[in-house]
Amino acid sequence: MKTFNLALLATAAMAALAGSAQAQDDCLIGISMKTLGAPYFAAQEQYAREYAEEIGCKTVSADAGDDLNKQVADVEDMVAQGVDALIINVRDSQGLVPAVNAAAAAGVKVIAIDSTIDPSANIVTLVQSSNTQNGQLVGQWLADQTKGEDLKIALLSGDQGNEVGQERRLGVLAGLIEGQLRNGGKASFEIVGQGWGNWGNEGGLTAMEDILTANPDVNVVLGENDSMLLGARNALRAQGLENDVLLVAAADGQREALELIKEGEYGATGLNSPRVVATTAVDIAKQAIDGSLDENTPKVTYTTPAAITQDNVDQYYDENSVF
Image (cartoon, rainbow, N blue to C red; front, side):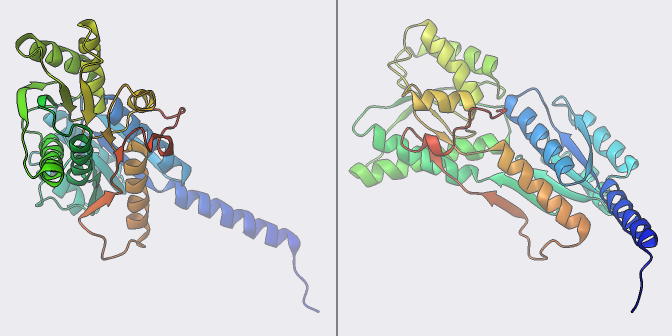
């Protein structure tokens, strides 16, 4: 009968485990965020970092502070640190292309998230919710809720020139037009003003105050994200108008917005989960590092779209969500 040296086997097993741990430690993922100043982006960074570490990768993270030059420097620094993959939410769709392409040329697997990047960028894929599809679903819901009403819409946008914001507002408006045509054979609404809220609560508050000064008869506020719309709600409450105005957001699904939807104080928002976007990007990054990623992975990876309303909010609400 063949005999085994248990001590040697134990030593070999421990060495194998150590080697496995070392292999995991050798996986380094960089996370470059254009800003952590907005709750959505802060949650996105946290989910990406926590999930990467959960599956055995170390992480290095940087906040560009909404500064293109800072983000370029962040990317260059991460490449110098030897990251295997880079998850990046870009500040400028064209301005980051040279830095991204330099990272890819150095062997880094680059996955863009949320914000669109120019097609000339050498990325593995862009992971995002479909702003167009989400927007259309929200717009169709708005059309169904306001049949026959004369709509005076205040539009709250993020920042000028931002492709994501443009996709979101045009998606909602396209859905609204299609819904009105389907319901009554004609389409009619007025955008009484556009304010720039820089994606945040305070910006939404200020923009809404400015719009209300000239347009007190607003009856719909359309925000390109929940955070600005929550700020706008405070401006409406200050003037006693919160019960006269329907609130709809093109995207996000922020916890506070979902709580208001449950209570009937907020109309609808598009599903743009920072957790789903972030963890999907990390999974793709890990597969790219390991060499197991499907070679047919598309250049854009969309999460499942949905309009979150009082009818389905319980499917998406999580009281423990960080966003």
